[in-house]
Picture 1 (cartoon, helix red, strand yellow):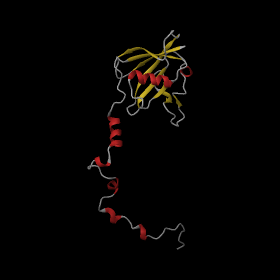
Picture 2 (picture 1 turned 120 degrees about the vertical axis):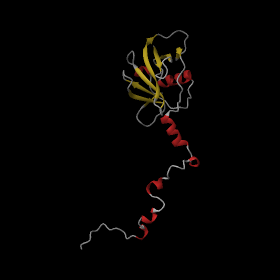
Picture 3 (picture 1 turned 45 degrees about the vertical axis):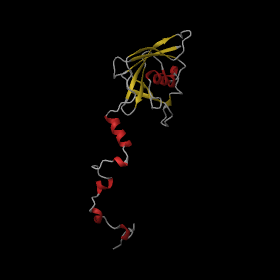
Picture 4 (picture 1 turned 180 degrees about the horizontal axis):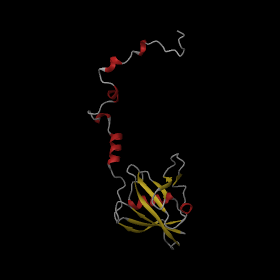
Length: 187
């Protein structure tokens, strides 16, 4: 049995891809087909989600076992998760900016003689960029990548947030303190 899907993006209304898969293909096959067709960098993380009719995320299928109890794409066969026409999936390919593709099951058909599956049967528009440096990803990138040599001199050091240079004499000298006893005085 052949499963047919349409893939759309909310970033560009002209973008559309139609794919056909065998019911025995996995979500990993689907992932690889999307990656190849859209010329994405295969080293990037991605996940599929079963979605509600209003595109709310439900069950996640990860590229690798993340130790979260989610099923992996490799272990998930299409016929095990596709139950009805217009069933929806989300394919998240940019986690930092929560960007993805809308995937909808449009029906089934018979295998065409001589056709290799999976296959892209219709292609329109330019695919979205895989990684977009929006405000959230730029902030994360800068927080991770900026080295100690490039630190902003205007930002205080962590210890400066709690003490200024003159406060060291305010702190008690714990080295000369008597140990505190848990016993109460009878006085």
